Amino acid sequence: MTAFLELTLDKFIFRVDPACAYTPQGIWVKEAGPVNRLGLSDFLQQRSGDVAFAEVKPAGSILAAGAAFASIETIKVDVDLLLPAAARVVRVNPALGTAPEVINQDPYGDGWLCEVEWQEKPQLLAAAAYFEQMEKEAREEHP
Image (cartoon, rainbow, N blue to C red; front, side):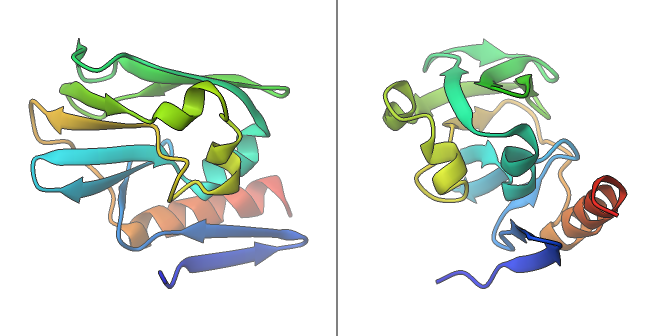
């Protein structure tokens, strides 16, 4: 069981998985050799709302840094998720087609979005640095 970094504000609990690296926008990255799994941080999925639809670029897609690799739709927002570096999509989470709500239910587990192979090294935040950024943003939104 992972010991998450946690922030409790009012009725909200935001978790950061220390085994992941993060983009400033809230995409987590877990490395496993040449393949890297990507998903939404707990803070980003809670901030966005209940996911009703998730679309990820198909396996085999080669995307530039800053390109949208996925998009999610909720009642509150439509969000394009951007790659921190050029990558090739290796695999897409098959559960998203029929159960996109798994992103909200288990953001660091079964709610992953896709797996990629980087074409260049991304600039990512360590979990502690992302936690600090997330805490600042959360406190601004929930004073």
